[in-house]
Length: 178
Picture 1: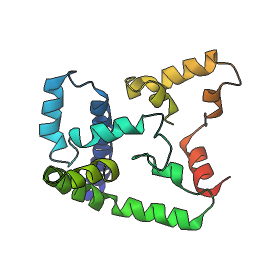
Picture 2 (picture 1 turned 90 degrees about the horizontal axis):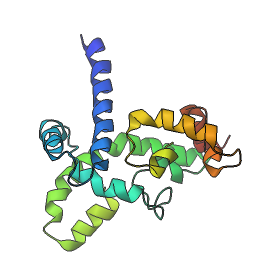
Picture 3 (picture 1 turned 135 degrees about the vertical axis):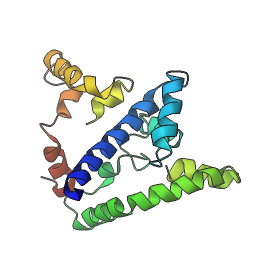
Picture 4 (picture 1 turned 120 degrees about the horizontal axis):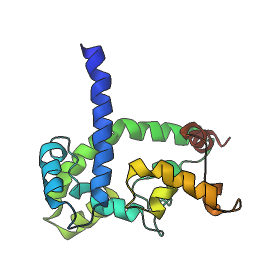
C-alpha cells in the first residue's frame, strides 16, 4: 500500500504547492472565501498558508529583483554553471529546505515582536518568463499563451531567446554550463 500511497501523496502535495502559487497571485479582495477556506483546510495543515508566500512571491516578480541574488525564489539563477561546489550547495539546500520552511513557519508569528526580526524574516527567510510578464495568467493557460507568442513575435525577440524545449535543457545549462 505504501508503494501506491507515496507517489499519490507526492503528486497531490506538488499540486497543492502549485495552488498556493495561484492563491498568491489573487488580488487582496479576489475570492476571499476561497482563500480563507484553502488556507484553513490546506495551508495551515501543510505549513503553506498563502500569507507566508504572497509578499516575497510578488518581490520575485519585481523587475529589480527577479533573477538576482535578492530573488527569494530563484536559487537556480544564482548557481555557477559547471561548478561542482555550487551543485553540492544546491543539493544541500534541497535537503534542508523542509527544515527551513518549518523554522520560517515558527519565525513568522515571532517576527511581530521585534521590527528587526520582522525585517529579516520578510527579506531573507521568505520558465517562467511568461509568468513574469503576465503574473495573473493562470498556469493552465501558459502553454497556449506561449504558443501564441512564439507564432506572432519576431525571430529576434528577447522572449524567444529565453525559450527552451524542455526543463532538462535549462537544468543542463544551469548545472553544467552546456
